[in-house]
Length: 251
Ligand code: 13P
Image 1: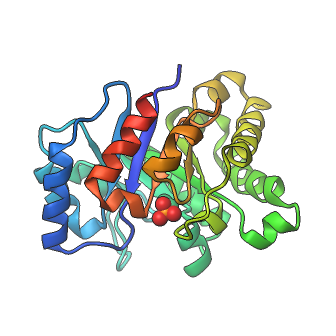
Image 2: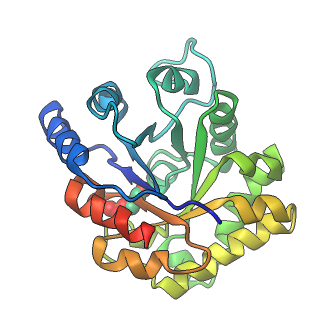
């Protein structure tokens, strides 16, 4: 059985004050046993969050890492080794906001994936299609290519220590959620693509759904056979709502 994972991506939200409030809320949550829970604050607040959540069974990760694994001359970036040194255990790579707004290519994302793993972090590879791509019937092709680049570059074995998050771009921050059936179709295709290379890796890898997940739709989504939890944006900024989503993953 795959252990569910719920991760809260705070994106570029927060101030020292609001982060302190959120930490307080998270500390008070009754989290389900049997579910891994993580939060991914902006880098600036990672230390504050790790200190604030000390003793709470909650992992902390980052939203991005540099293509180079080790510290060095790369202005403005943060190395996976530094994230690991700070106490992070996971990192997002290839979030659609970075692919679209910052032009991150599949090749760059593969390098970040490798950098993360080389420092002992679990990369969470984000994939997903735009509304235009879905309407053109290209969803599985687009997601297959995003996943395929990492398989080609690093080998399928890399996914024995990674997570994949399917996040349809049209569902992110829009209030539109993929139906459980739409999400399941893509999750099954992702697992099949991995299984074509290595059945054991495919069986073990956790596939998260992201895109307007709330407590109200989480149970249905997490009930699908190939959905192993969620990557939560907006709703993760509210501790009570996030806690309810985590409990939905424990059902
Ligand atoms: P929302 O939950 O706000 O739609 O964001 C999803 C997301 O992009 C998480 O990475």
